[in-house]
Amino acid sequence: MKRSIATVCLSGDLRQKIQAAGQAGYDGIEIFENDLMLFNESPSVVRQMAQDSGLEIIALQPFRDFECMPATKMQKNFDRAERKFDLMEELGTDTLLICSNVSPQCVDNFELAVDQFGELADRAGRRTFKLGYEALAWGRHIRDYQQAWKLVRHVDADNLGVVLDSFHIFARGRDLSTLREIPGDRIALIQIADAPWLKMDVLQWSRHFRCFPGQGDFPVVEFMESVLETGYNGYISHEIFNDEFRSSPCKRTAVDGMRSLLWLEEEVARSVPDLVDTEAEAVSHLPPKASVRDFEFVEFAAHGDDNATLVNLITSLGFRKTHHHRSKDVDLYRQGDACIVINEEPDSFAQNHYLVHGLSVCAVAYRSDDADGMAERASWLGYRSFEGNVESGELDIPGIRGLGDELAYFVQRDDTGQRFYDVDFQPIESPALPPSAPGTNMRIDHITSGISESEFLSISLFYRALFGLDIAQPQDLIDPYGIVVSRTATSKDHRIRLPFNMSRSWGASTERFREQHKGSGVQHIALACDDIVAFVKRLDPSIQLPIPQNYYDDLEARYDLEPDLLDALRTHNLLYDQCETGFLIHFYTRAFNGLFFEVLQRTRYGNYGENNAHVRMAAQARLRMIEPSV
Ligand SMILES: O=C(O)c1ccc(O)c(O)c1
Ligand SMILES: [Mg+2]
Image (cartoon, rainbow, N blue to C red; front, top):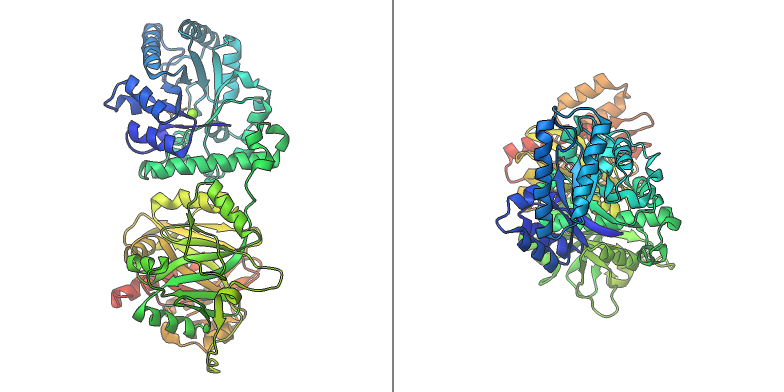
């Protein structure tokens, strides 16, 4: 596929947009007229800029409100088109995109529209230009691609084709049935956009909520399959109007857009290999499939007193130090299957992380069936790799730059059942835990990150395209000081669960964390155990987040809980949630540097206790008022 992006997707001025698109590796760019109008260089300078960035200007757009206007306006419209043709000449582009008329003055007269487009195509043809006609979902009379194609077919001019924009098609009811019947050479351009399914005014939906394929809910892969069936082999061009993109660095957005196109091509090539005929896109040229299976360990950057704070907390949760790194100042703590690595090695990535963020998670390691394959996949998608200092005989674990300043590692288990710590670490004789210590088989259940609004879609793509996870619809969580928006990335078997949260309110939980932690990162680690009531009975309650008694009165009224259970919940700061098939019992620890742990027990329960998130956030906010340092 030839890859393109419309300048409207990116923040900044036209120079920044063009440079970002060029650096991200696109072949072409659609110039939005407004971007040109607001730029203080001539169209011929823009032409040179695009050329210098290795980009073909594939179209100028949009030409608006052309057809079926009152007679007095039509002459003006033809004149206006001629002015745009002059501009196209200077820009060095051969295609003008016209969108269907939205003006209240536009009359519903198909024959008239055919005549007018016939004349416009003649005029364009005289200057060897092409036209593309696109139905806006909110057009006055022409609103869907079938109507637009009917018009183009009736005009029957070689230089007039139809523009298919996935947003308008899905926003009007995802009918792809007749798309396959359009001959590929009559399609002027494919514009691609994904979006979340929302029930709202379609113009607002389009102008604010479009996103890159892989970040939303539209069946974009199916759309591309239908497009390929037409025989179309021109550009696929992102056209995303999105509020987050407007406030994000344009380079990152451009690179994410490229990742999205690669992901889309991969999905199409894997689902219908016969439709993909170019060698570069053949299945044999695709990267290894996503293969993250589980969490392997969480690594903290710590130092001095902070190290002691963390060790005290996790020891209270029943972790014990089992290994020390062979060559580095790194300890491993384990509790059942859950592994926490604490890194104090001087001059390391972890210590740099500590200097910036304080006590924090600097890496999450994922178990993979093919760790090198994951690294290769990451590099194919343009994610940056990380090379640590590896001594001879130690595992060279592939790492990449992940969310915020963190690393993501990919760890493979070999057939012998050896774990990463059997190679790089030495077991230590640790004193047995006191019999009173909670001891039940734990595993990492989920790891939640606090991120900024402008990172939200970027992270969705990271988890979807690189990790192959499913991304759930956003949910609103109610903090006493604002709304926290939460989405979760999950593997098919739910062994990997990665919620990520953002908030526009500086006082809400996510932003309070980001302020303390100096940026985005892991805010919350949830550990699953088999018997939480037994666990909590041996726990030092001072590490827990206190829950108000009113919560338990409400629980009692809401559910028919056994009195013993209700009593245990009440006594031990435990929260409870229930679904049709089962229930969840969980508690939270007090926070350190904005981070906290959760311990939970799931019984046929697939959610996250999100019904209790507001209780947790209110309890944390209250503690913060009493003890501002937490
Ligand atoms: O929102 C708009 O005006 C607009 C303009 C051009 C397009 O191609 C489009 O899909 C939408
Ligand atoms: Mg469009």
